[in-house]
Image (cartoon, rainbow, N blue to C red; front, side, top):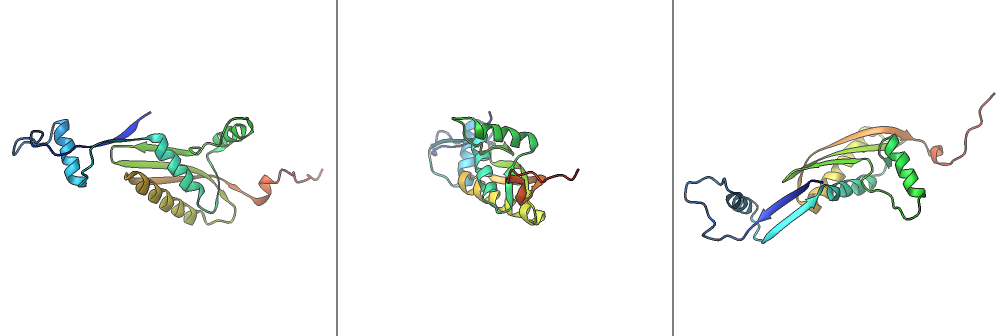
Length: 166
């Protein structure tokens, strides 16, 4: 599991690189990051990929017109997980993230409700995911790729089969 790490340290005159020297040491890079961000906090914050994926999954499900997340295989596994006692629904189903030190990229796989304008749905998902991740983590979201695997009709979930003419 990879993590993103942001490090800031309090300024210490003995830590500063000599005048004219590049910030090639870990201490120099940490000081440069602190100077860029203006943060005065001491310590280190690590954000795991799964945290960013959960935020993206929840933000995607909040958008009207999203019926479900994931491709066919992920949805089948999700249905099995729903039936088993002691398990919970996965908030990361259908979500893939790549998290760097300061940026994140997100891939979202969905099933859309029938009748929804897919291009508008994808734009709404992008807005919501970017907003949630950037507000909660401080990471810059470079892209949100949306893949629509299927469309759900209202009668898909009713469980009743349409009689066939024989």
